[in-house]
Amino acid sequence: MKTIDRSFINGEFKPTRGTKLFDLYDPSTAEIIGRTVLGDELDMLDAIGSAREAFKTFSTTSVAERGEMLLRLHEALEKREDALVETAILEYGSPVTATVGRTRAAANAFLEARETLLDYPLEMKAGKKLVVMEPVGVVGAITPFNADYGHICGKLAPAIAAGCTVVVKPSENNGLETELLCRCIQEADIPPGVVNVVEGRGGELGPILCGHPDVAMINFTGSTRVGKEIAALGAGTMKRFCLELGGKSPNIILDDADIDKAAALALVIGFSNSGQACHAGTRLLVPKKRLDEVEASLKRAVTKLKIGHLRDADSFIGPLVSRKQFDTVQSYIRSGLDEGAELLAGGPGHPEGLGGYYARPTIFTKVSPSMRIAREEIFGPVIALMAYEDEEQAVEMANDTVYGLAAFVSSADPDRAVRIGRRIRAGMVVVNDTIGAVVAGPAAPLGGMKESGLGRAGGRWGLEAYLEPKVIA
Ligand code: NAD
Image (cartoon, rainbow, N blue to C red; front, side, top):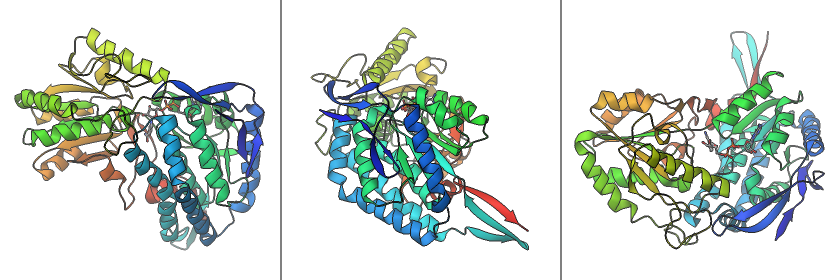
């Protein structure tokens, strides 16, 4: 059993000064596989100080130098791909094919940021005035548990491209993954202090990072609840923010859609990353006149999803990350039943033959828009199916949410689907496909409207989040 008792500060693994412990579990079995010594205020202050000092010189490096560093980071992750994948399967419980995909995407984030940087005019003219795009400063990056490498690298890559230095506060659930990632970063030979990583509880380290006057920006991915706390914590020192928050995305099946195709797609959209995906299309909106067909098709399709057997290439659903997440999902399933929704598939408890934190992929039908399972983000494999009368009502129901992260539309007529997509208040709308269509290059802006966030990641939009325009006249 491994104990993570070092923080990555100023290019070195330094003994963590905090004393509290956090147990790490294999979510497939609920057995303890490791332990993290959580950092405390002194570790966090040390990391912020190191990032502040490094910023003085790192912010003056050339585009070519930073481009080289981004290449080295990409190569360092590529070199350790097998170990990164194995660690994420063990600690996070995600099936191998998806884990390989996410690990490669994390490594490729550095290439994408490099390409964007090489194309981006860091100086431009506004009439006779000179406009200079400067790195914003020290960035606090706070990440969730559902794609450790991807979230950390997705923030480091544009920050480094811009010339910023970073203090990362990763999710406490990913200690083994984060430690291995730090080894890759160390091997990439980035100047000391450019990347610093401190493990710890969000409630304890978050306020230090978010309130510190030497930190210019907070880039946070996580729940809307914590996002709001962070915005309040950072307001006193007028932080810049990029907030990628929760979602409850609608997936509209239009009346002209191929029902079997749309139903199979709905399961991928709703259950990808074992339902622990911010963009998951968990509100399935179905035309009343085709409801029976959709229900029958979903019932057939769900039996074909492979659960468990995480190292099999065709495995699709793994366990939830933790006991806490498992309990949350169970309580939502019970609330759906209590509020009168009907089970089309799944339900409470574990899938047959599996223990740990595995939940049953669950589809509710006869859901009304006021039920909790229709309104609140569950972050587990639970789909709520609701029927609509006509296109107008479908759009209204899709927009009836505080969230605005993603939306999905299935139709035989892509132009019709795009017309509807234009009316949905969401940062990303996908037609006849999964979120992969949005993430695939060339880079596009990724992020949410309404309470799903502030700012965008990806491409030049993502780079600009780390830059401040300055005019010299
Ligand atoms: P969370 O909000 O509970 O925690 C996220 C991070 O914030 C963790 O590192 C946690 O330790 C830290 N944190 C907690 N309290 C804090 C505080 N007071 N101050 C500062 N930091 C604090 O989220 P989670 O459970 O790890 O992840 C699931 C959530 O993340 C879901 O809501 C999901 O939608 C969201 N998410 C959003 C996106 C996106 O791109 N929009 C992507 C992935 C996940």
